[in-house]
Length: 325
Image (cartoon, rainbow, N blue to C red):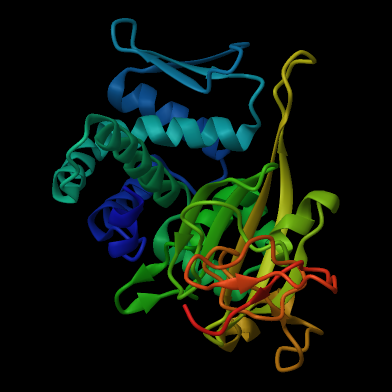
């Protein structure tokens, strides 16, 4: 399923254009809060009543018999709005979603169901952050993520995710990668319109600033990093907290990473005062495939390299890599 989005360059034209037109019909961008506008649209066009309730870990439930959509009042307004958007696109763009799903050619049942959710989420993001309006505003604000979230009544994460999808032919935005990690370093979301590579299995590079974000809650960290292929990126990272609403249930903490190649850095407010041509942090994809010989934070040797362990000396990394395979 992730390969499907990768080969699509993380942009789905039919869904994006359909969502852009739907945003106008829903009255988004007007004086009314987005949550209210979407609830009113569902009521007027589908006869669906929206109610809010304390509902544990539920985010959204639709009862087709009573035509009732239940949202969890514990969730932030941005999350409730996104869940409303998911319901709207499921009704109004359902045929387009199913066509994209058929084109994906997925064979297993679970993959199909997960991809349907992902396509619905994509369309919901495109509805709340309509392509041309969002792209123009992002350029105007120099991709100030907090300002974009405030302007479009969305979350920081939703803005980051949407920026990674602005790849419409003839109207491309800055090509970003976007990643979300949990506290254990597991990648729970990854999208990229760049050459930046993510580890498919195992851990990620400890020198990447996305890991440091957990120690600086609420701050946006900026790093200039260089991958083994020589490509340099300006990397943004911030930790976010998703509250459970209960003392007995742990909150969820994630680190978000967003970045682009340094050639686009002038388009970002975060490049102000950053030396883009000076020394960069030399990061890799994962120790198991990283080719760097001199990293003092290497946890494992690469799978394609031999190594030796000196008997009479000890360095930070207790082995040295051999030059051949």
